[in-house]
Amino acid sequence: MSDLPPQTTPRAPDKETPRAPDTETPRALRTRIRAGAFTGNTSGYAPGHVQCNIVILPKAWAGDFLRFCQLNPKPCPLVASGEAGDPSLPTLGDIDIRSDVPSYRIFRDGELAEEVTDIRALWQDDLVTFALGCSFSFEEALMADGLEVRNIAEGVNVPMYRSNIACEPAGPFSGNMVVSMRPFLAADAIRAVQICTRFPSVHGAPVHLGDPALIGIEELGAPDYGDAVTVKQDELPVFWACGVTPQVALEQARPPLCITHSPGCMLVTDLPNSRLAIL
Amino acid sequence: MSDLPPQTTPRAPDKETPRAPDTETPRALRTRIRAGAFTGNTSGYAPGHVQCNIVILPKAWAGDFLRFCQLNPKPCPLVASGEAGDPSLPTLGDIDIRSDVPSYRIFRDGELAEEVTDIRALWQDDLVTFALGCSFSFEEALMADGLEVRNIAEGVNVPMYRSNIACEPAGPFSGNMVVSMRPFLAADAIRAVQICTRFPSVHGAPVHLGDPALIGIEELGAPDYGDAVTVKQDELPVFWACGVTPQVALEQARPPLCITHSPGCMLVTDLPNSRLAIL
Image 1: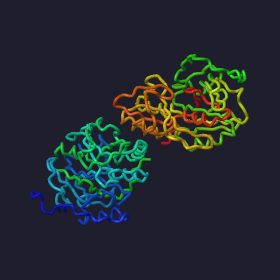
Image 2: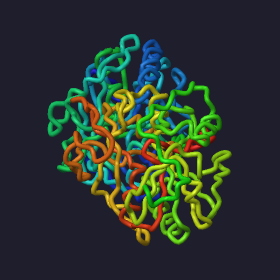
Image 3: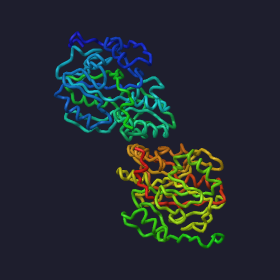
Image 4: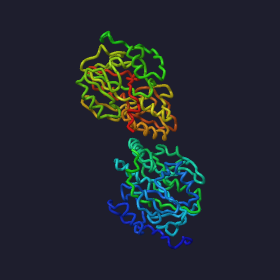
């Protein structure tokens, strides 16, 4: 981290962010984040509002990345994008993308260089911001319908796996789809397909269910990202396209600079989840 | 059959009904049926139009049966019902239910008594007609989307099984759900859930997928009705609520008289399938 300007604020290690009341608005939460007073996982905060995966790239790389998103809408559902050099995302709220994400990851030539809580010192006139939908929105819709989301019930991160489902390549961006897994009884899996179909902007319907080997996953108990969860005897594993997919594509493309959110530390927007429902 | 009035026309055994051009309208097909010139399976005829399962009951039994349908909309999706004694179903076309079904089954005290092609001589002032949606409509929607429907590809009747899923009882009507099965790759099964969700009037989304034993089915190769179909190694069996369910409930309720269509010999209506789509 020593080769980065001192103005960036390194992320504090493992400090528990105090829980806000469920009534805290997205804007109030962003104010705390902007002040550096909240640097943790945003899961469960500002319920009912869209949270986003963030990818920031130099303009020279942004066109191909946008095309990669358009070709692969299930893992990379684009909710908003910014003008080059403009840190605002007006359709998502009063946002300054340089300070309003609790924690950022800085990748240089595809390698993780450091993790910081503010990128004002790194901002450049050619940086383009992409905000992609995230599974928090559909998990909320599943729970609102009475389904148990296992990773939430067990208080862990959702298990994620590198599948053998190839993404459509665009310029330097390519790679296989990363999928998240939530187990359900068959009837609940069918209901989950119906519910998530309404939300194409947050990964949409599952991409697979049943035998993990059919999409190249050898061991459910050994996820590539996140934590393993219990899969009961009568349950089917159900797999969704996952927002980690673009990070894998970015690692392979190796742009000179790329900034993302830290896993679980999302951009909290003013957009109600219901606004993403197509039906 | 000797105890029935001679005016009923017994169904001709195994005579192949000549294939109509795909352009034959539902009304033209019903004219042939009404004249006794078409007495066979209606699968594939008058494509694009709703075909219906038919149940005709004395008024004293009709109220409970209607409630059974309302409590069990997936196996018994009510598309239309008639007034007592009135053989017309005006919302479905210019229909005389006494002659417009290719073949009828007459049940007395829950037992199959005979199979006929006309019920004018049996008609009573207290008979109530129920028209229930049928899987032909959603099979057409699946194929229009590019999915292979295995029973159609193999030229056989869909396999059907008595499941252990209990229907909600209503008066004398009760029993377990009969389910039909079509195998699909997982991604196609997910697509089938999406497509069939749009058609609640023709059984809607599947009720189960994956392990047949979880709904009480021991052997996929030995269906209780219809024919077995190939299930390939990578495929999941997908199960839909089936229109044979009310026939099982009727056998258990044992009304003094009940008239249904013969399996596969449906009422062909003027209603376009698209009119049943909720989205």
